[in-house]
Image 1 (cartoon, helix red, strand yellow):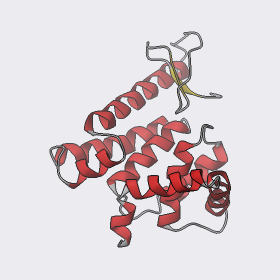
Image 2 (cartoon, one colour; image 1 turned 90 degrees about the vertical axis):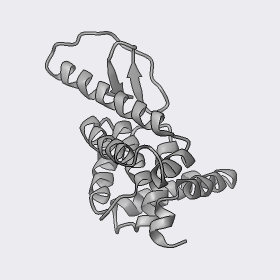
Image 3 (cartoon, one colour; image 1 turned 180 degrees about the vertical axis):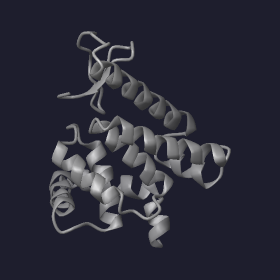
Image 4 (cartoon, helix red, strand yellow; image 1 turned 120 degrees about the horizontal axis):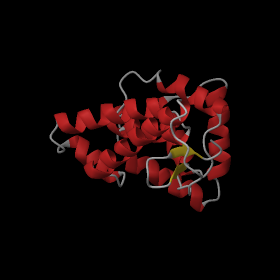
Length: 181
């Protein structure tokens, strides 16, 4: 596949991640890509694979990982819709809700501009996240961003809440934070 088509084909990266998992190589490949992300650099293909593998990992992004991820993410000239979705999810997983909201906003604007159909819909659906799931993820991040703002201002005093697989804690009343946050 040509580079742009490959980068915008999330199912391709999901299949690669599945194959690595089946062979017991996911952790080693993620460690290698993470090392390259922090060090010498990583190409677009490997960065997209890293985002796929890292999203599947249970741990939240460390501050060092988030910093390296951010530096590499801004180097993408024109992120594909699937890359925007991956970036939004990883920013949320790292507790960078403002960045996650920005990327979800770009993705939602793209969906609305295209009327939720065409190539964008096909791409997002292939990753298992239709238009409503993308908008739900965006709404959740915006809710978490608001909750963080309330906590930072001292206006939110709610107790602990359960965590989900993306590292969010949410008691259903707008309180969100990442694991360890």
